[in-house]
Structure formats: structure tokens, C-alpha cells
Length: 157
Image (cartoon, rainbow, N blue to C red; front, side, top):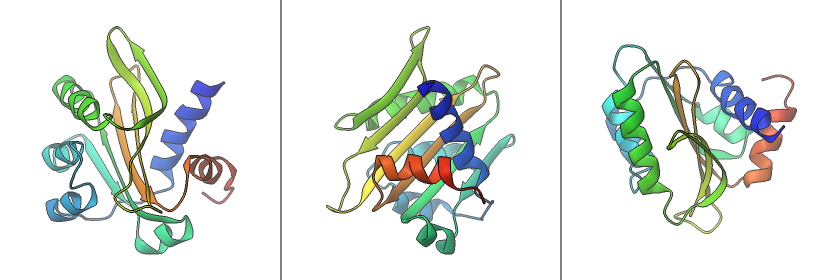
């Protein structure tokens, strides 16, 4: 049941957003101390990749200060690189959920230490059976329970 909820969380997060143009500079500011920023910079403008950033209006509605996601279709090299970045960033993180299969992480939900006391940071990761990678970064004053509540109770998303 928890696996289904986590899967829904990742896909719902991707579905509530709309594409917005972003540059490498915005990505660097977003998670400047995180290795996952390299995933957004390296793959963000490639073919078979969708990058999404939440508008300021939507951020305020959900108590977030930053939201960025990337979906990469069937790229084994990108999967290996993303896993390496996740491994580096999870040091010091609270592992809310992590699922591995055949030696590699296939889904993860981490709460990272915030730069400011009242700002939490979350990284969500999922790779499906078809090899589609989804990586989501969320920052804001919401906590883990708030994030789950937003994604599972909003009917208008």
C-alpha cells in the first residue's frame, strides 16, 4: 500500500505542474549545494526529457518556495548518473522511503537538511519498469506529512 502511495505521490507531483522555461542559473540557485542539480543541468534540454518548474503563484498556494522535476525516458546512462547523484545527496538526509531492486535504487523519498531552519527540502525519485526516470526537488516550509496531504487530498490538481 505504501509503495502505491509513493508511486502516486511522484506521478501526481509531475502531473500538477506545467512546463516553464528555466535556465541553468535557476537550477544552480535551486539546489546549489546538491549533486542532483547536475542531473537537471546535464539532461534538462535533451531529447526525450521533460523538465517542469512550478510557477510562483502555485508555489505560494502549496507552501513551497521551489519545485523542479525532470522526467527522462529510457536512458541507462542518465539512470546511472542520477543514482550517483542521489547517493551523494542522501548523506545526512532522512530516508523516508527507499526501494532497491537488483542492486539499484528504483524509488526514493528523502528529506534533506534545510539551509534555513524553517525550510525543508525533499527529493523524490522513481524509475519505472519501462526505464522512465522521474526526479523531483521540492523546497518549502511544508513538512513530509504536509507534502503527502497536498498530493493526495487536492481534488483540483
